[in-house]
Image (tube, rainbow, N blue to C red; front, side, top):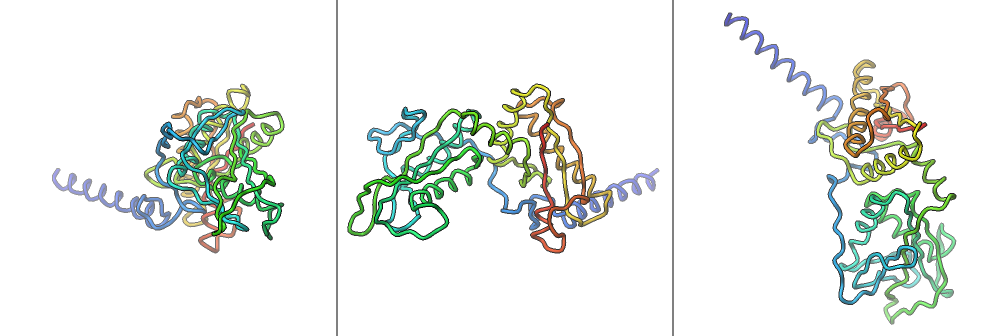
Length: 301
């Protein structure tokens, strides 16, 4: 009997070590692994963004349909002839505030208007310097987790005042609006066909703000389209066997499904599938290509 028990213990230990080695070292799915499951790098664990406190002297107002929604005690700062936008400490939480609002209001979108003067010098990809400045703010919102399809940018010529050092306060206007049919069409197209790169491949799953935002949008979309289903498909790189990668693809897709369910989406509206390593979108010969292939695709139809 003792020999049988000892053999069972040794077998269990061997299986546990083998599973750890394959999962962590070969596939790189453990939390402390150096392998990445994200093309752009993983974000910090999801936190509830801070809500700005009321300020006694409001300078920079973020509007909703013409009415003040958020107020900050200092303006963004611009540099003459430059696209850069510097945010002083009192205004740095603006991106978290807007992200939080969009998370709770899936029918809203953002317009960002960057100001510029006619005599400012600009050579770049955008139509004017104001639009380039607006894009800097757009990037901050996207990094906070906002859906880029829900952000519009524009430039507006205005008589900005620059000091002797070429500095100006203000020059950025942000307003939230209710979506019209044209904006909703663009946003819905992005919601129904989305490729996700996040930490869903790690053993310890931690949703990031981008996934939280997307889950809220998927929930709202399914509520509007009663017959639609979300098809969640897991993909992997070519490291390991075909059978094992099919397993990991389904495992990753299941993590996204479980998170969607935790956010209030009925499980019966979600279908999970796996393609394993059979549908790469990049070469598996490089780490960058393999990282692109480790993904989740969501199609709603």
